[in-house]
Length: 153
Image (tube, rainbow, N blue to C red; front, side, top):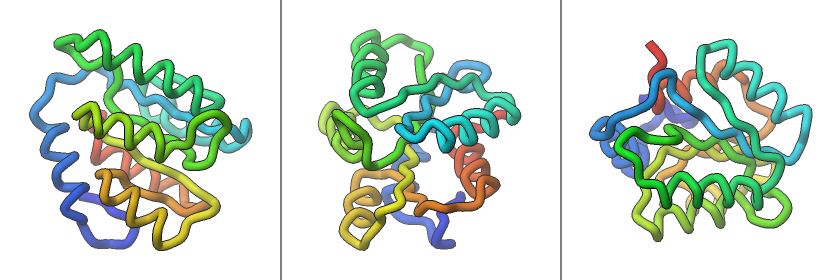
C-alpha cells in the first residue's frame, strides 16, 4: 500500500480494507475537487490517461452536492470509487466533507491535497482515513496512490 511518508497508517489500512469488500464500477470513477483550474486540469488529465472515469468539482459545494447524491442512492455498484480533493476550497473544505462522509459511515477512499499542510491538518486527515499530499507533489506519487485505492488493472 502507498502512503507518501513511506509508512502505512492504520486509517489507510481500514479504508483499503473497506474498499476491498465492495463492488466497484468499471472503469473506476474518481471525483476530483479542486478550486484551482490548472491544478484540477493536471490531476484530471493524469487520471483520464490512466483509464479512470473522472468527474470534476470546482469547489467544496459542488463536491458536497455530488457526494450527497451518490450517498443517498446507495446503489449496489458504487457510483464513485474515490475522491481526490483539495483541503481549502470555497463553500466547504475537503476536510469538512470528509468529516461528514465518515459521520455518515461512508468509507469511500479519499485523497486530500493541500498547499497549507501542518501537523494538525495531517493528523485530522489521517484520523479520518485519508491520505494527505502536500503541494507541490509528484504527480506520479498521486497516480500510485490512486491506483492502490481504485485499481485500474
